[in-house]
Image (cartoon, rainbow, N blue to C red; front, side, top):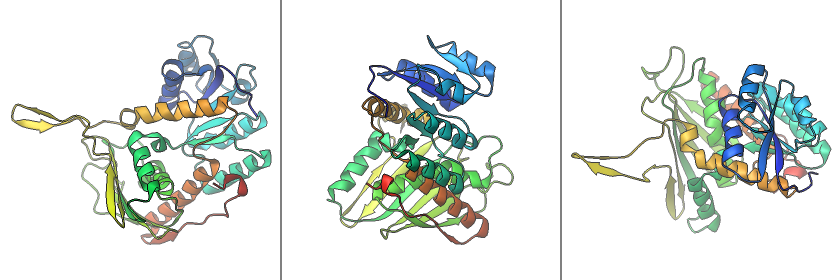
Length: 341
């Protein structure tokens, strides 16, 4: 296990939008860590990001970065298909990892990662489901844990983006967007998702040709709750994430975004965030700081490889439901002892 160090040396794998933002975050925002290496298949991009951080080296090979004496931990922010190989390399070096979602793009590869981590005998992975670190979601989780509202019966979610990126498909609404609601459902309710149904109206005129947007996704859980998600990735006006839980003795809602409301010139209103980095900036900061703090203590906390695997399995059921137009059961292996609460 990693011994406690005053300053944690971190290698960031992937220097695209998310990876570069994590480099900035570790270098400028949080405490207890510094970026000592970055990795990208694009050598020029890696070198450009490394040049902004004192003492940071640039690599194209993850193993070369993880072998460096000044690397104590790893952030994986590369595209999902590259995660399994990077995680296995981290296991070879027994390095703790903060892995952006998805853990891997499918349940079979996620299960292989799960099995490889179990062979180590201890957790190394924290998966980047950052909503668990959002202040509003944390308050909602704390309220539910008191039990004062009674048993959760339903959970309503809305997830809206201004526009989908180029190359998006209908399945990516499930795999790249609703994946967050899958984890939030499991975390808030403490339930596993057992089945998924996807309904889709006639596509919005703002949706690119061939994309079924919006979609209405319904989860069933092993705790008897029903969960729905409105996913609308070409709403045109802003980025919105909202959740309302309906319990036996009350309800609670987060994500209204009314931190400040203005009244001027005969109008009232506020500002709608335009992307996920703006909306969840504090959550990302809190997530990475928690990971650094735990790693310096020699611990691994937060969403586990099991959480990443479970969400991958739910994603696969969701895509089947979307394609077949029916209800798809979620197929999960038994939860290993390493990941028991």
